[in-house]
Length: 489
Image (cartoon, rainbow, N blue to C red; front, side, top):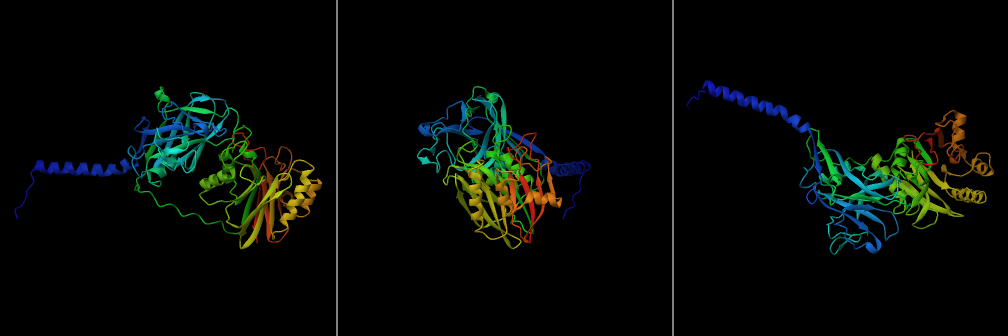
């Protein structure tokens, strides 16, 4: 074999190439760890479809040429929501870690200054402009549910009445799951729905991709990268098991339909407060179902359950009672991290009710109840008596929670406190009670909300508190929650 001899020039060239390779190798991690931001805003290419859909007599109208995207909660003829489809399949890489994804919409018109909860939902079917309306997503192909086949809820933005303001919708989780291919198509499909109540002046209008003001058109801004790990989407984490151990943390709260002291309906604010208390079970009063303020078009109980699951990553189980016995109305809801052994409900006189759920903690069944009795002094004792008779059908131990609209030292209170232990008083006596307001009051200066429990050795109270759930000085409800912690033996 001939011996190859490299000239001095050849040697230098080889060294140069080696240096270049080493530099390239050294820069790979930096390239992988860099973040990139892209803006998808071009009408027809980046944002392929955006349109309003409206119910009732306008259900077949095509709004794909409008320069506005509208939302409204009203009668079926006037209810509106809007849809956007954004091409994250051809203009965005697949399976990359998304650091943030924000949809920006600019307000064009508002009927009032009220803060409206506009919620982003995933749309399960691929809709097409000029063919989509309240009833159809394509020509001849109907939605399974009129108004759009909506999937998961991906967050709420509160929209006021200041025209020209650009509002940001955080859709990071939705975009990440879309580009990971979890929904099949990698086009990001979004519905913006007003999930508030049917109040005067809730109409909102945003600039569409056809707006003459190009700076006000919708845009999706995504930042991705920032990790040197492989970009293949990780397998979903297994669902955490139900809680175990001997501790049971319960909360009682009248949430006033999720309407806070600022006048805004905020299921998000309510569930954030619940999550912060790390409870296993929560009893909620004044929860609306397809009716009234804050939940005219949806089931607030189911919505709160969904939000709790999103925020905690665990399954929450629900039992409710609608005091009118139908689909529309209001009532009480029990949400539990423990799966129910049994559950049910009963109606009381004068449109009140009790929700019930039995769970197993530390090998023992514990039965929980949620109720809200009348403020009227005639009906209140009747309803309490009916509720207590019904509770007697269930085994011990029992925990009865609710807004009883009565004060300590009244006859109704004594009828409850003689049969069950008042958790707040037991905590005060034991030195384990605390309250941000110093009194334990749950409604102004009054203590109207209670956790009562069986006087049995299987259930021992270890602490009770009325926590401060204000957010920037705003109360999420006109009642304070009360949290009680038990050891189940």
